[in-house]
Image (cartoon, rainbow, N blue to C red; front, side, top):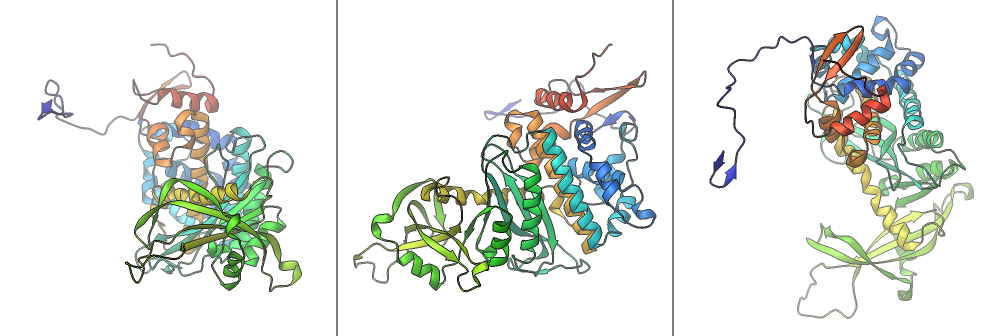
Length: 475
């Protein structure tokens, strides 16, 4: 229909819809769960959970099946325990073993303690290693592996949430600390995670998380088989504990520093002839001045981090400084400046100058913001809520959300094309939430999917690489 030059989609007049009945036992709304959960099984998710989780009482029975059910629900879009009911519609009980009730899964999560969450962390780490062995999650070759560390607050409501508090964002919530791994050719995967009290500072527990993350990275990226590892973080994590843990684990660091007197003195020692002009790929909006900055210069100077500590705790490296014009309004606008005024942004790095020179090191460090995309992805998916009142249950929910996130990354890699770096909502819309009718014949199940599905080639590629080539269908 055309109205005032605008095409509109309208309901059919020849065959109007007059009724709707929920009565077909052979329909499913998320056929993409079949190849994804087959991939999860091949990578050992259920077996790992069964072998490592020791949740007591009948609530912890069959942990492999319950963890798999939680992950499957999150893949299909569940962001609360009640949403797990979507696993029990239509033909789902015939396609999957034991689609647990939401109440059962909620009781399972509420039985967790901190020790059980750490066991689930081990499941997530080993599962990621299993996925990496079956899919090119991080690509190959001698690429540098970039590990990004950051935290974010997930807002919660109600006064019964254990650990909820007001942190640096002044939002009541719980704090999520993540470490992601990526290369220049791959989308990020999450290699370590931790849920913390909402009022805690950013660096709390970062030392241990860095050790866990780099241990997982070594399993994904064996030494001698690939390029170096670089840990990137913002100034909240510039401390001897976090930086020292990364250096001792064999990784280089690239961490933003605060402009304290020592750093300012180092910047002042840089001669004017040592600054190299660079152009930002895109202009950067300056919050302080309300203007867009598109011109900058970089330079570096040798720097000894934590020089006031013992010699064993000191870390030698480089201080890379980027300066941009200071566009703050002068006190007397009619008076010309005698010299340029600059604002400085500095970070400390131990990376090899032969691999990352001054300009390349600065460009590489600025891409640390990729971890913010991961937080946005999670908050738009399973971490839209932290559904339980118990802190340990929410910690376990976070780990399951990370497992689901990495599984969708693996699915996108196998599907190929633009889905290789797609976000979770895109992968869910194109690969997971595909309606299908299950036909049962001769102990074989055939899925009948929508004709002219826009992403049928990607879906078929994923299905073929996980479940084998589809058998011919006879009418």
